[in-house]
Length: 340
Image 1 (tube, rainbow, N blue to C red):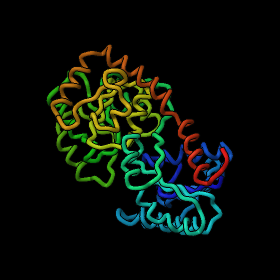
Image 2 (cartoon, helix red, strand yellow):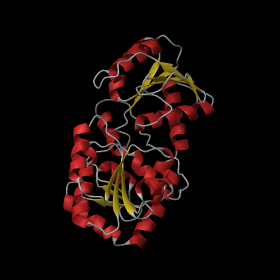
Image 3 (spheres, rainbow, N blue to C red):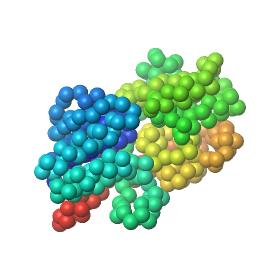
């Protein structure tokens, strides 16, 4: 099949959940014999035209907060309409607003809604008349690394910090973590907040203000590569107190490293975690529930370790990229009317 991806900033992925998704999926589709083109933005993917067999196409845009995504989706859709693709795969509802352009030119079109990639959200779109297939996010389990780089940069030695990882945006509720530290104040344990701003500078400044004067709260900024691997390999507990999520890759990554995880009991997290078995949940509307659950978990290291082992096993069984690629191919074949 000849497939084009529109809506992502670019690949190879350096940051962004959508970008990592397209990076992983496009490369694997090429290895399975398909011709894949990915539309990229000049400021994210510099000049290169090929990436592990994936064709990279630079189309015009303006790097501004409100115009970048729309202009790039428009220019990419216009270009795609003139090409001989079988199918155009949009990433997000915003970019898909321009899907009528390649569709008018005879291409088949699908869209992935990245904030709606869990089973509980499927009915939302079905009730609006869309034909929906739910394909969950995935990760590749990694082998744990010892704390070398993070020891040099942050003085972390392993099992001496609680980790949060993701974009620093209000719905992630990182401020709850900082407030919880003031109430729990566990001796010798640091709070590591890994992630960068996502056009949320004012909120990030608020977080730093909340943590002022507290040497046990560490902001790493955006992390990748070995530093990210070491942080996930050596934490005592992973925490994700978000008020809303799709199906968070950060949580799946933490579970894949065998980390015990504490998550807000929103539908996306409850779909992944079985309470008390492969992770822990707290009442997402109640800050005191969050604090109390964390205290109980930290006081029971045996249960925390067991949950981490079960979490890794679950990810290896249910959330692999091989499954994602096979299911995505099936959707493509169905849309194109190909024999299976």
